[in-house]
Amino acid sequence: QRGDGNDLDEAIERFRAALQLQPEGHPNRSASLNNLAKALTTRFTLRGDGKDLDEAIQHHRVALHLWPEGHPSRSALLNNFASALCTRFEQQGDGNDLDEAIEHFRVALQLWPEGYPDRSTSLNNLGSALYTQFKQRGD
Image (tube, rainbow, N blue to C red):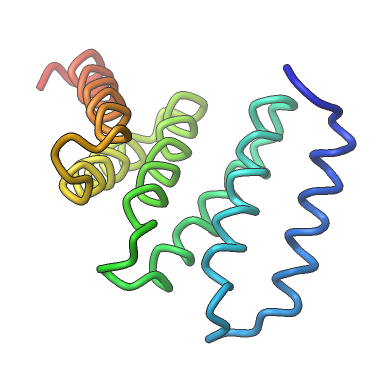
């Protein structure tokens, strides 16, 4: 663990404040939602409050709908979203979360150009999710 949990709490407060200043249609709203979602996922990892993870997933879902198909950060958002869904699957065991995560990992992988450094992360994440699915379902 790095940093102070109070810093993380304050970061979450600041991300929420930024969102209050960014109404629907604001060009930075999706990035702020993604930042808030990542911070909430980190706080879930540290403290284990499932409400943080559920809220993070909600924000990822909204941010994904706000970012157009060709947005350069869409693959990173998909990867973050899918990772949060995998974490929730590990906690709650809902196969729908794992299915959705695999779908998002696949799309994220397609968006990374060949040779791009983050492509290996997407390959590993997709591989891990598929392996988990195999262990759970045998398919």
